[in-house]
Amino acid sequence: MTDIPAPDALASRLAALEAEAGACRLDEAAMRRHTGELVKRIRELQCLYGISQLVEQPGISLTEILAGVARLLPCAGQYPEIAWGRVVLDGTSYCSHVCDVHGQHLSQPLLVQGRPAGLVQLGYREEPPPRAGGPFWDEERQLLAAIAERCGRIVERKRAEDKLLKLSHAMEHSPSAILITDHQGRIEYANPKLCAITGYQEEEVLGHNAAELGSQGAAAAKELWATILAGHEWRGEFHNLRKDGSPYWESASISAIRDAKGAITHFVKVAEDITELKKVQDVLQANEERHHQDERRLDLLRFANQVAQDLMHELRNPLVSIGGFARLIATRDTPADKMVEYSRIIFEQATRLEAALNKALAHLQEAAAEG
Image (cartoon, rainbow, N blue to C red):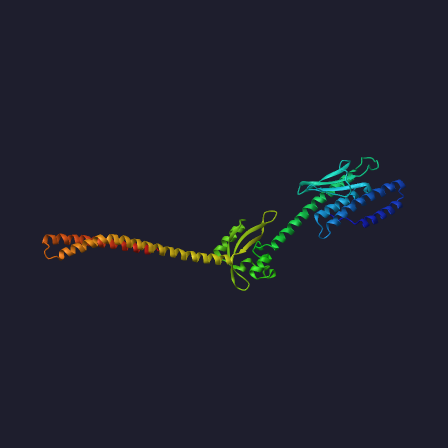
């Protein structure tokens, strides 16, 4: 927006024009008309200038700006002493005086990002003096439209500033480590949490490549860059080194930041220190492996016990048979034909006994191999 001259400068110009008009010997009526027009312009510009000065005040809130605009709006009328101004945004009204919205007044929509968000209104608390063209002139309508357009841009700017302030506060106080780099990976921002984790101060890492903070294989780095350059989010873990050389693990997500045209300009990494979590996981995994081994050993002992019990049942009858027939053979009066029969039975039972032992041994060897 073009800078608006200060009211003092306009007053000086008015004096110069009045002198020039006198030199040209304008008649008194023409001089009054000319002076009236200039006074009107001064009032209009005073209003716009006042709004500009209001916006530039450091630390001023949007609420204070809109209330200030409402107080300045009467200056946009032909009769500011009886005029009122009103600004409405998202259902909240800001008025200069008691507003008679049911009487004659001008109203202009307040657009924020192209959408109606409120109104800017100008009216009179009492009937103004009669004049040609009705209670409002085209100049007043044009000025009110300019003020409404200016208010819309103010709202957009202040909301954007407030959003940035909130985002900045969130990043500065985030429990996560946040790193922002340019499109080549050079660090442009590191929040306090990242500095606390790494031991580096922000000024120590600015301008350095983010890869210098950690170690990653060539294949993993290639896959990471391929993902984020394609505009996708990458998630994974990094094994990094702190400033003092001590290692730490972090779980991170990296995504692209694009400009208004969709081109990638920066990357943002949000990470959590998972070093302690890794240690706990390692302990749990070791305990789980030991527990698994103990369970396998116990299962093997149970299996061996069962095999031993089965083997005892398998061996009992053959052993009894072998013992019994061996005693009969040892008797001197045992006939020869019975000796042959008893020997055959002893051989069969011995074969059965050997098969049972081999079967049990095979089961035990198989279980030991699986354990």
